Length: 226
Image 1 (cartoon, helix red, strand yellow):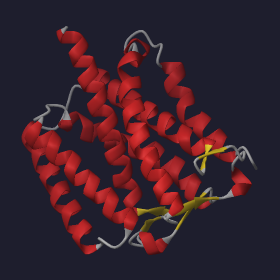
Image 2: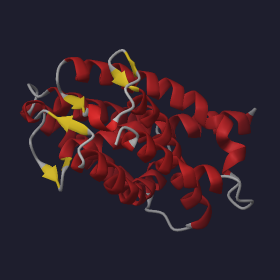
Image 3: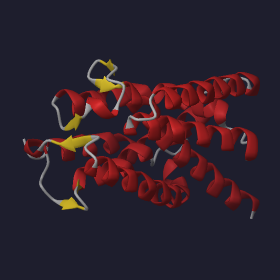
Image 4: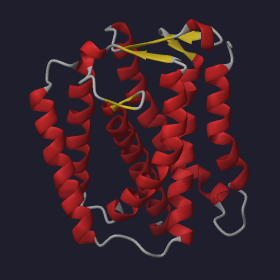
């Protein structure tokens, strides 16, 4: 069906938008802190998306998209970089409000260092595979900057939110890769799949969400301090 990818996007964002007006979390009041980061992050990831499409990292099944394209990307793929970050920041905000427990900063630092080490190792081992190299290179740089340069204090809360976000991640990406709407070229990734989802997708998503949550926290705190 031509509207498959569009419907997946709509369902991804439907409940976060509707529940944004819950009086306790009051997520709608924080929308203004989301848009700048989503814009900056979206442009960066769309730039890579265009390059990935050109170089055959992935392609899109014309049977499941409406056919409107910009720079070779389907409209639905562009919307993906708005709907998914919005939904995941909503999860992050809700968990911050409702869940008081969080990992210790020490544990968050250990997790971050392990992720950096893993990302660097996989980058070195797979530097000729475009998707793998870009994904793990970006993740290593982002985590190193957040941990050692900016010394942010929200990584422990981020890891909890990311773990929870894997539930909708497996649903959405599972559909996109199983139908399939998105077709991956295994010559440009490690060829390791979790179900139908490439292993790299988990960490591509993590990098996308790190940038969005980081921007959200920055603009929210800047407003608080003003």
